[in-house]
Length: 149
Image (tube, rainbow, N blue to C red; front, side):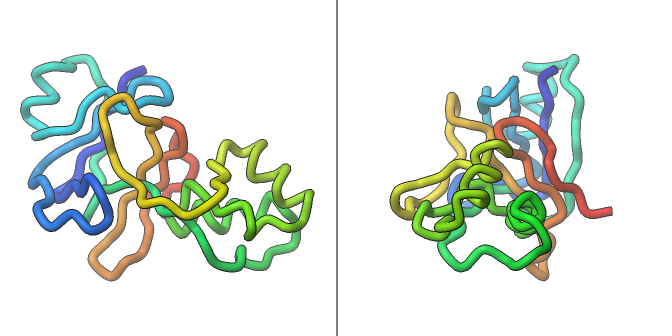
């Protein structure tokens, strides 16, 4: 099902100096179908489900720091998702069980850090953040994998 993830601000990249206002990301399966003004995307995709997020929506983060501690590898990967990370640098996954959990969960494992970006046709990895920086939602390859209640 096609979903429009909408927010007051949408950044195409973390350092985007000119975010889109009242915009959305159209997600079809695991890919980004389009990014643009919410009203225009509603017209293009009238049957799409709309998920409205507060704050700023942008690309999922690339995690290049120690993975948070938790009782199990799966919970450690979920801790990354709660931070808005959708990718992790392979050097941070030295434990084979942690690497397996990341791959099983669909988290992108990168050989080196790279700046994340939202682009048409790209993998639908995005996150929504409130003004204080708290992650309210993480979408991993088009799947909503974290939502703060």
